[in-house]
Image (cartoon, rainbow, N blue to C red; front, side, top):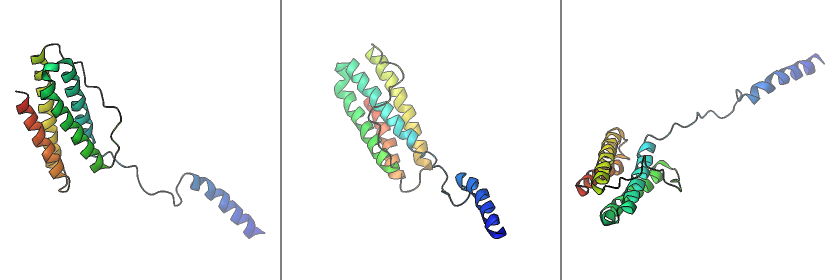
Length: 149
């Protein structure tokens, strides 16, 4: 009887511990966000900015739409690489395009320059298997700057 009482006491003491996951629960810590996630988010934001600019300035659409499509393609490849589903809606860029086409192009150049710099930094710190994709994104962003001149 003492043994049965001791086992019951031990079981009662262990039950709360099991509820706290101290006895054999999931040992895996929450996953940190992928270091390429900011590059994915930025590609989506840039795609939206270009599309908005093309809509606001139809005379620039032939020049800007292919760049928006390139950013969407980059986002798709980054999402595939890091194992996430790209969001169905794209983030809104900060601010509407200017009514002045030159100001709009200047804003896109500034965004693209920042994006290129971020991609170069991500490429420099990326593991070898990720560097080709991230490097090609950095190169594409550099060519986008040329297309905006």
